[in-house]
Amino acid sequence: MTSATSGTSGTSGIYADYLRRLGIGDHGVPSAEGLFALQRAHLERVPYENLDIQLGRAPGIDPELSARRFAAGRGGYCFHLNGAFAALLDHLGYEVTRHVGGVYKESEAESAAQGPSGNHLALTVRVGAAEYFVDAGLGDGPYEPLPLREGSYQQGSFTYSLERLDRADGADGADWIYRHPGSSAPIVSFRSNPASTADFEAEHVRLSTAEDSGFVRAFAALRRDADGIDVLRGRVLSRIDPAKGDTERVLESPEEFYSTLASLFGRDLDDLTPADRATLWTRITQAHETWLTTREP
Image (tube, rainbow, N blue to C red; front, side, top):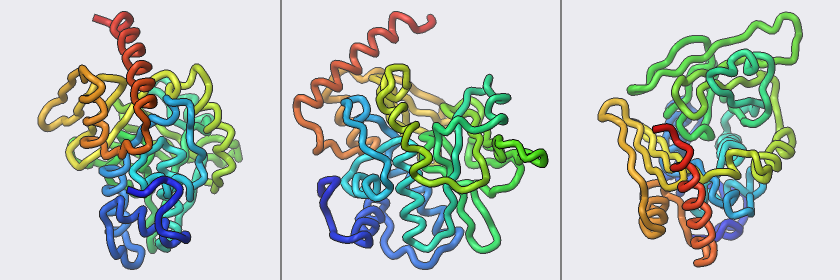
């Protein structure tokens, strides 16, 4: 596996390596079928994870840097995942728009409608006459793009919805609301107007360094497939599968933890030194012990 800063030279080479990570060869011309295949592959093969943030060395969100990192077996969170995915789609000829978004709890629906917080990068993609809500950066979001129109959408055992908000008054609030009750991102709002990477830089610094940020406080990795979601939060490994039933177990050793991260989540670990592994495991174990003392019976 190449390092995150090497590999085939040139921008085309970066995206060729990125496509290989996704298991996709000759993509062909832009199409709805191609877009759906790309999102499915991205969710299955590039994990949502914050390992580098936990080690205090959060990578930047430049899309080309993220693309190089993904080609080298890494993952990331929404600014990395959707940022690089948008750049890949651009490279392949898709009409992509980036949007300022925000993730909210189910109790924060009113705030979500008032205007996105900026802690999420949302994407829409137009293919011919159709437009889609595309998101590879929620961890447990839709497995395939959703039509960008109001309605409820079923994908396997999961139900999602999109709602258009009327902004006739010209207020600078949200234009769309996405809902997936019970998930880690139950509500996402986003504006229709385009955004750029620069619009997320300051929030990325906050989310990746602030002591009260969830990304700093706890380790997490998520991977989506057609049937469900694999979730590793600290040392607790869960499988969310409505058809077969959910499961949960605690990983008891650093060997089991790193083996799971590599095999189940597809996160290449060749960038971790023995000291990195020891530091991360100690941090995760301390957080796990704190969680055990505070969790509800």
